[in-house]
Length: 141
Image (cartoon, rainbow, N blue to C red; front, side, top):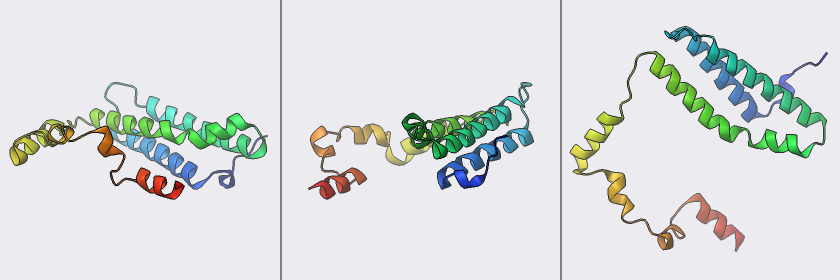
């Protein structure tokens, strides 16, 4: 019998599992009028089980592929979690506020700020802009 303990999870893994279970509970609490109320929690439990299995297997074996999966699965999980939040919000009957925020920007600034700032974008300026990437460049010198 395989046992799953929290000792095999890193802090990031525990955080992802916590978010998945929190979203599953939120999905169950809000309900899904479309009749698929158990799909999202079921998917989240399956993903959490996969995280436990990958961490348990990667900790016990020297398999390079499993270690790569363990190190990089959080990147696509960002998109999965945000998509689930969007699905839950839409199932609650709430609307997006994007149109309202765009109208506020146009009222305050007279234009779209991102479109206005895009005319200053230039590859030569990007290389010297203050960003975390510039700190990496300084450290490499």
